[in-house]
Amino acid sequence: MTIDMMGLGITNALHLALWLSPVGVSGNFTRELKMNVDAFALFFQVMFEIVAFLVILASRGFLRPEEPHQGEYYALMLLAVVGMMFTAAATDLFVLFLAFETSSLSTFALVAYRKRDKQATEASVKFFIIGSVSSGIVLFGISLIYGIAGTTSIGTTTDLLLLRGPPGLTLAGHPDVESPLIV
Image (cartoon, rainbow, N blue to C red; front, side, top):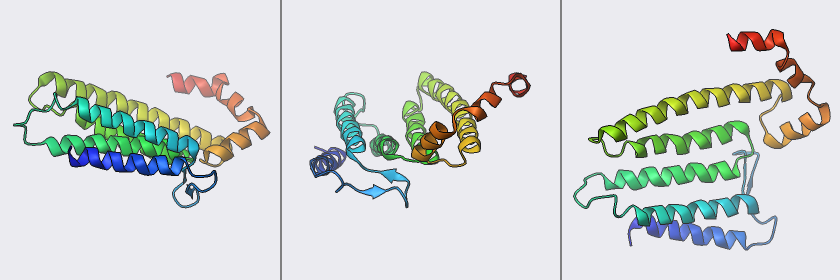
């Protein structure tokens, strides 16, 4: 058993111990880090760790013993898992975006792990271009939500939009606003 598998096992055991604790004992990092570790987040964090453990077990056949950069593969894999775990606990749109980017940047590198394979590098470049365009679109959407709600907090944004209704969103569907976006 390697160090990465032992680390995943230890964190999985700690998450399961937290998950079994009474409600309200879990960490609430909403003010400082804009994350909330509750039963929902812990469930998905445990699931991400189990899937990562299975992926590491399955990738034993993918990695050849003579390859010199096996540590980078495991580090990128675990960095993707950390990004997914932050995604599950995020309570702010920018933290959610940063968590998605953390996991996606490491997966860009994982796709191009075999540097000499032309298909791997081509797939990585295509994945990077599509990911960059989609990140720009998501940031544009976050800026629209911030412009309408005045905050990037997911809970506050939901409450404000439910109270105000969608008058700001109807302006976005107006032809005068929509036509410059199409051009």
